[in-house]
Image (cartoon, rainbow over all chains, first blue to last red):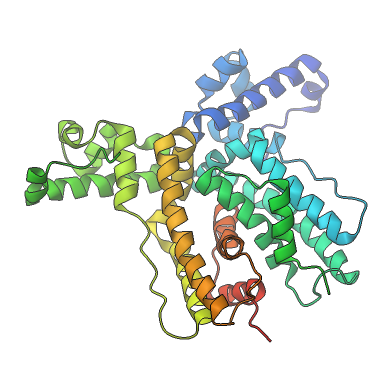
Length: 195
Length: 195
């Protein structure tokens, strides 16, 4: 699966590790700047300042390289601890909004969707990343339900999609992001505090 | 703005009109099949079976061509009449789900987001299309509020985003679509029927 995994010997060599990291960040930066169509082994080699042969030593080609770059740049887990369960949900949705507003990953999104459309390996990787992120939020919403802070009858998976869907939608269709107070309004509307 | 607009003389000539339509559908088909990076004037000419010079007679180049193709293939307005206002809202959301599940336009989405990321003209076109579609659904939700079928305190623009956001999110991240009964569950959860 992960064509980018080196042997354990290679992983112990800091120069090899450094050049791998350079190549993967160059790949990710190119994805965000020129899109899926623009990421070629040539362009990555030029950007990272390494020989094409160095890239081919680690990855079989463009698809494996793109897959490894996405894997190496997964969105961070959002720290949402403290406060009530509902406040933790809010913190997590605000984390998503900040992430979508600013990160290289978010700037890469169109390229990632494009890649997923063309390459089944990327599609399954993107699905597994998003499934993991959504599961974390669903767990938090279940705890909030148990604490009596969220309607116990609500379908939590659907709640997750209605909480984060609007954030991605605006970014993709209108290049706009949710301000922190807009996230509060969103969470208040989707997950009203129990009366 | 619309670099694809011909003179009125040209628009009256059915052969010219036919070749314009051929070129625009070839452009749109290519967007869905090979993505934004793969749509070149050469590729469109080959696909449509016309000379490159024919394309340059109507459009200044690749950006104008892509813009005209998006404009010519706007998603259709969804017919949602009859029934209660809430049933009309449901019909409209189901129309969006069907559209996202099956149309060429939906298969083009990653390419369109990619194009919007690279080209401000495409970005503003995509924004205006989506703004128009969302406004239609917001109007319907306002009527439903007036009819007492939807919580009068809800922010309708936010409701629209929470109704359609999940549908796009699933398609883009997981290549999955909403089945008709899942849309019912979504609408029931986001816009609960008044008790």
